[in-house]
Length: 367
Ligand SMILES: NC(=O)c1ccc[n+]([C@@H]2O[C@H](COP(=O)([O-])OP(=O)(O)OC[C@H]3O[C@@H](n4cnc5c(N)ncnc54)[C@H](OP(=O)(O)O)[C@@H]3O)[C@@H](O)[C@H]2O)c1
Image (tube, rainbow, N blue to C red; front, side, top):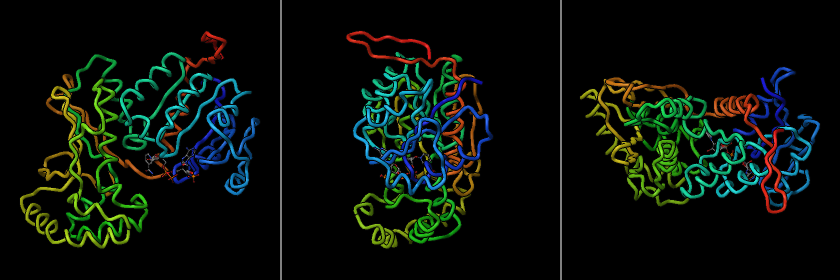
């Protein structure tokens, strides 16, 4: 076990709040110390370790911060630190790069820094490499399911990954199961919304972009310099249904698609098929596709239950049967646990360095 890691959490939403609870429940002696919690405006901070009683109310009246320095100065007295991104903010990769310059590692649940423009993603990875700081983001695909780590192992051990197939949206997995059980899609979406499985506007799930981002994150691990616009994306429902901006009217509008999808589900169920929303990465063809697929009963995705996710890696070594990973792939508790596991990995990493920017030179020293 390495030295103690000071942790600054960005985001007090579903995942961030659960992470606070899980950090609080760790036994004393754990190598992680939460020193700060920030939302998009305020920072609650104590370099000796935050007292967590009433943290949410205290954050609501904590001082406002400005810019990256306003956050990262919190690590001034830390021997080792990690910034945890439990936001869905765009453009936050600049903050990651600032963190690396200060010798602070990053753990992210946020997909956007890894699925934005390739040049920005490369700049972030280069900054992490140059600084020697950790950059971990296992939960960006499949929540706490180990997907990115095993893929990196396949790559670094010299295997050749040819195809990746996966069901990466717990929400769409749930909807597929409900439709296959005979529920009209509009009612299935309404139920998923009530259960808290969807984004505030369910269009953000049904449009498929979230799955496209995950597929892109995996493809880029393999060195494919592709952009989000390169993903061949078919939404879960016809595109014309996605235009409605009001979430309630959007769900009502889905009734126009109920009969067509229910009829198809009935017919194809009779043929032993199941509806799934799958991502497929054909590495040799440099092709990423995401969309609804009617899989045969013997397809591994056919056996998924509820919000389960699944990934299959077809490689030179793993054939004719692919390496498969399956299990709950969404939800605050598993996602926060995955972030926590990443934090433990950072704490145990022997490769952390403090980087100080001197005048005109980059000095790197152990911390
Ligand atoms: N839920 C899951 O199953 C799951 C699984 C894997 C990954 N994730 C990812 O985990 C992330 C968090 O999800 P969530 O459901 O917890 O989101 P959420 O409930 O919407 O919470 C987002 C939080 O981020 C804060 N925030 C926004 N911009 C910020 C900024 N620039 N700096 C600091 N804080 C900022 C927000 O604060 P304000 O209130 O001030 O805006 C809010 O507290 C997302 O990227 C999501 O895609 C979620």
